[in-house]
Image (cartoon, rainbow over all chains, first blue to last red; front, top):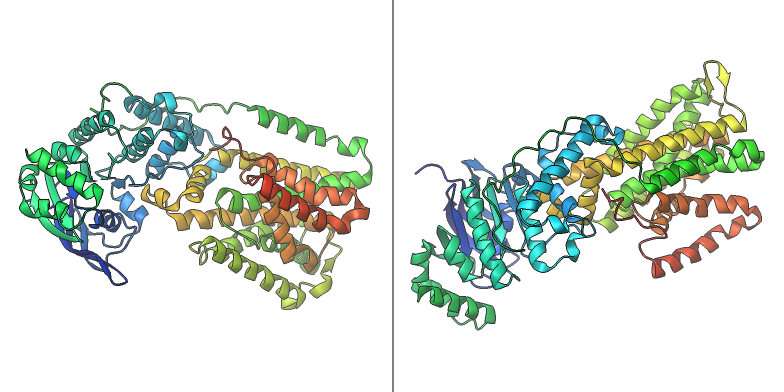
Length: 271
Length: 332
């Protein structure tokens, strides 16, 4: 097997007494849609934060195309081609949709700071070319109509799409989506499925955390299920669906509504 | 949101290179500002010497306030020691001119570069601090700076009395000693600063500082190196403050520690908050309130902090975004 795009090797994260992630191993191959699932509090978002440099793992290694990126700062991880969205949307408040998405072009920007201060022709050309580039993407994502609106004033589903656009415009090699379907209605979550598959088909590897089993079971190529920070199962959606440990983890002793609903999703999808 | 999104080419290609550089359209606020600036040029023609001096002083303080705004209003760092960079600019010019006989214009680059380097060096270790800790650290800089001036460090600062008799700049042998000449010089420097900041607002740097201020984590995951941009913002703010300082030294023809004490930093800080962070008209209004109004009502000058203090409380309660907040259209 060729070198994985992303590989976690015995990654652990300990927050004063709490082992949030424990000796986690998994590999994401290029071209996959890779799902990370697990009950609430299983440590899924922590795993994303460990990959993207928000936290530094207390043990283990993160490998990116064979290179050790354990504990690299977020901006260095981004420079590798890893971009993400957040579970709780983090758009820039008070800026328009267009200005928000243009932020995703940061690493592709060529102008130097002094060119900006002097307003040189090359700098102005780049600014307007970037706006045009963002405009095209907004068109494709059906966001043109709200391009000049305050991004954080939009409906939830639209804000999610703006955040996705901001990560996409950065031309990721790996796109990490943290619960992209949270807060979306059925119609929107159906569209999201198509969007994720289209992103994969354009050559971007996708890693996603999701509660919505409809999304997880229909778009992923491979799934890892974690519970209390530990991997309890890995396989194709079909394998995960019928895995006794996965079903138990979701039902278990945890009577959280979300977990129950998600577990029904697992069983429903299995039926 | 109807239908399928054509995500076939989800990853956008490189921007199509536009042929000609787009011309900046003059926005209405920019036109109004330019007209006001032009009207200001008439001050020496119609008003007396006192007013010419006040207008020149306004120009100098406007430059410092705008430089404070780069650090505080645009990059979101609680710098409460900005008078240090203003003071460095002023003292470098005064010392080089008085102690070493340099012509004023020759001291300019040295003053600006010294302030820039000091800004970068002092900022580097503290830009990762949280807002309140950074604020305390910058207060410390200011305290040390004033202490050094008072103690006549190196025997060149003149101690608590400062230095007197700073010369006037001369250009091609023509002295610019008259009040009017000094005014035009400062008024031009003011225009230059406005132009720089106007450009900054429309640049990648201006946008990036704003992203960082709003959400450092989100900006980081998009590839923004927070430390680098914060140091850059500090250095830039210090450079402009140093430039204002050298103008100040020639305008007053004297420098003393009192002009660069902690309360001056507080005043600059307050101008930005009360006027409107990241807003050119807001910061200029704040400057007028704090530095021009007290000059006009000299009899009441001692009430300056009293009046401004009450104004600060009222504005922060009723209008926390400032008197003239940054407009949506003007956001980068």
